[in-house]
Amino acid sequence: STRRGRSSTSLTAAGEEFCVTICTPDGERKAQSVKIIDPNRAVTPHWIARNDFVSLVADKAAADPGITVLEGVTATHLELMQGEANAGRVRVKYSETNAFDEQMLEPWLVVGADGARSMVRDTINTWTQEGLDADEPGAGRGPLAAFRRWRRSDRFELESVPSPAAGLRYKVLNLPGSYPLDGKRGGEPATPSMTYSYRSSYAGKDSYRETRMGLLPRVQKDDVRTSNFITPPDHALWTDPTLQTAEGMWAFLEESFPQLDLKRVLGGTGEVERFAASRGGTFPMSTTTKGGAAFPVSSGAVSEGKDAAPLVLAGTGSGAGETAIVLVGDAMHHFPPDVGQGVNSALEDVMELGKALEELDTFQEAANLDSNKNTSTSTSAGAGAGAGAGAEAGAGADAGAGAGAESSIKAT
Image 1 (cartoon, rainbow, N blue to C red):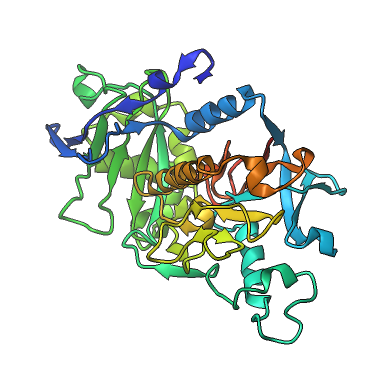
Image 2: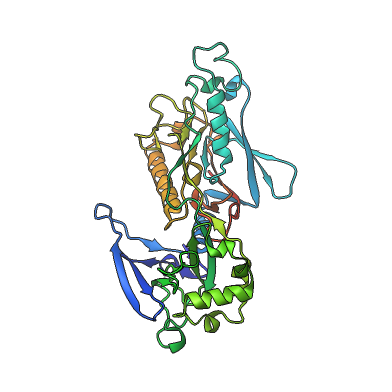
């Protein structure tokens, strides 16, 4: 896939080690590296910016004649279809932005890739908690009857998982793709494909003002590089009112990082002024469902639970013609945005789901539907920007919750 004529390989920086150049206030630089390749997995790591990644996946989806991409729409809710003939079927309702009328899809598979505030997850959580036990009165009647062969469950409720990153606050300062690495001495330019960590002159002296500035790799020389400031919530960046002003922020940055000639790099761009005014964001608590990955669950249809692979489908529903719903990415497990854990786990979810679907004899046979109903729907919105076929790109620093592009994808 390409974006504006560039191949995917030109958009990424790959390597078998995580290499970082540490730049200290005295102008010294020291390179460190850590192996990140798992010898048991034949994969090569790549670095890619979120907007490039989203564009690549969107281009790939648009080029596939079997995929219809609906842009500018929001999936509003799921509902169980009525009538005995539709037992176990689910309808997806969606609407265009600023439109009042709703439209509908009746898929055999719904992939909930709609982020940490997942409407899909919340809906099936309500269904599973409202479902009657099989031996209760009324278990065979009503819109939930098809799903009441299973006992009540809280498996789609979220539970928090401790993370040392939760609660940290962040801001992003945008730097040019290449700039003078040696500060006022001039000389060698920064290499876009290298990772840099600038250490503060306050290190070991003043924890209230100490911070670091980290830059992850980019390939294109003309690309903007985002430098991340990640601190505890009581740091001066958030509590010192002078750092909310352009003058105060300029003074703070120049005092903190004398090894970088910021006036030369950012003077006149307005970037430091924007950075001072930015409210930044807060790393969320890690969350995961209590074992829930797919719905409905029948004997042998879906293997799930804390000790089971989360996305192992041997069929698409609990019975002939029923709709299956699968969660991927932040909708199922939500991470603080540390070195791409969120987007990488989402991609792994999608790969596992793809493998499970490939094991089915045919989509038609699995769903037992007429050909005009043989569709699947993926919804993506919210903090994870819609990234095509179910993958989520986590909200980048300073993007804020809910900043992701919204989209729905219907694959036939």
